Amino acid sequence: MASLPRDDQIAALRRDGLVIVRNFVDPSTCAALLQIARAQLTAHIEPLEYEADLGYPGAPASRDAEGGRTVRRLLDAWSRDEAYRQYATSEPIRDWMASYFGEPAKLSLAHHNCIMTKHPRYGTLTGWHRDFRYWSFERDDMVSVWLALGDEFDRNGALHLVPGSHREQFDASRFDARKFFRDDLPANRPFIERAIVPELHTGDAMFFHCNTLHAADRNATDEVKFSVVFTYHASSNRPLPGTRSAAKGSISLQGI
Image (cartoon, rainbow, N blue to C red):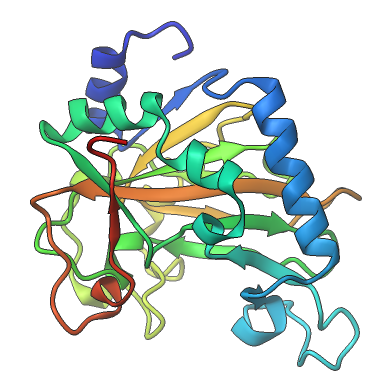
């Protein structure tokens, strides 16, 4: 996928629900983003999401328990530093999204817009899900860009994704009460068994569709994994009024 022209990258995303663009961001930019993330994680700069607050399997029972201050996400990456704003609205992303959507794009401030951290020991797994089951827009056509700030592989909690799953129609019964795709249903197993675990290196970006099934295991290494995730939508694809998707608005990439 590294050598694919942009049109072919977009075709791959439409077909598979994901595409990897190698060396999408230069090493110096990645180093700067990682330095900021490490400093803000160490200082516990709000807003944060703690593993203990989510209660996923293996999470600490509370913030006061052992490992209870383990951060899962540094939220609102857009507001954390100018370096993140510059990256999120950079020309390569702006042009890529305009080509994909066929119109100018916007960055959603309500969804993703975060620095994902995957910690050893207390970092929990992420169950199978589709992002759009949690979002409320007029059309379910949105793209997230996952930027690796270090190497990502199965053992340190890299994403598992099911190619082509964004084109499947699943009714609500295929998901549990928390909107996770049920791995205990025989009908769901063939999809889960098709999953791949792409390895990413510093500066690689994975573009994936909002309906692509994905999950992640725990981090079995000794190092915290850092990734940056922003989500984009066509300017004409509006969030539904009164929903969480509309609460924080979006940033137009046009003219930046």
